[in-house]
Picture 1 (cartoon, rainbow, N blue to C red):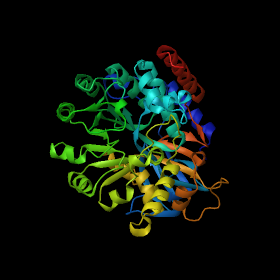
Picture 2 (picture 1 turned 30 degrees about the vertical axis):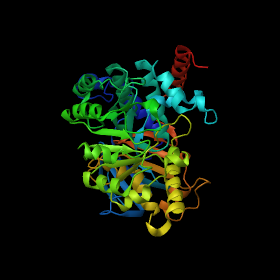
Picture 3 (picture 1 turned 90 degrees about the horizontal axis):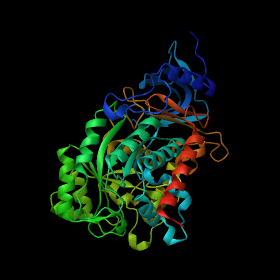
Picture 4 (picture 1 turned 135 degrees about the vertical axis):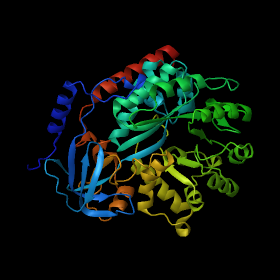
Length: 476
């Protein structure tokens, strides 16, 4: 049988037929089986003629190569693949690479963008989200997460760590997880406290356990963790600031459930404090490495703790908040990854994240600690999978791993003509160059458009949520 080209019409037709059978994506049990709308089928196809960047050192890269996918699994990667019966996806003039992995994003605030201002402190991210957070319904949580993930997909993300620090009830957690599943993306959901929650009040560990029972295990697309309130001195008191006794209670409860923990370090580093209390381990991810000391970094390496960097937001912080310490972390051998943080006052752009990291590294450190374009792409892909403990299934284009793949056009005016593909990705590319996004073998975007998602509906529901929240909160 001769192969044929997968154009958008083909994908839409296949998705419609799939939906009609009633076989839309679902989980294996409980609440996790709730889904609204079909996802595209997986099927079998070969991406042909792309510049393939595998991020797998054992396989290497191909100036021109094919990637064979069947039922969500990468079957083979080679200069040329014969796969009778498989459909063809034209990758000519594109870079084929692993999808971006975002390791820290407050998706619940995504639809608050119209209410925020960078030039008015009273209407900044923290005042707006803290005030309106108290008025969220589960429907608001769902709408915000869904519009945030739509932007993530359009920017080439295939995995997002949903850092949910406004879980007002298990119903809110359920709504956010449903949004993640309905969008077809891989990710972690970190169950957190509610906005305005007293520092003396423990986390809702019973709610966490309920969500774990109902959602885990699932089909492997979603994992669960907790996000902690701040520990020690903080520059963001609106997010809570708890004692070591409360840390022991919250983190101990999470560890009894076997769940990983994530924590902001938005102020003087709490690493020594936490280590002296015996609280650090490889199940901890810290966020915002701005003020660590050499002793802190030694501890982090020894304990196996990872750090997520949010370059766009961190680069705009005042000097007293510290500097992005990427070079020091890499030199110390600490696990590092990249994250968006929020999209209230800026957009999701992994290319810009890599670019900022490179420029700040060159400005501060230069060649004393080498940093290549390829290493930055690894930070945005494979290293994110390592951070979230899913590198066995994603993060690189490796036969046997799940097919989380993006295609980036190289013929657009802002990026062409391309020499070294890694250089082009880091220094020239933009989200608008992302042509195709495949998650777990499902083609969710092709030719820069969603294949089945009703984008207009997602935006409409997000706008309705924002208006309702604004009215309930009496926000100006």
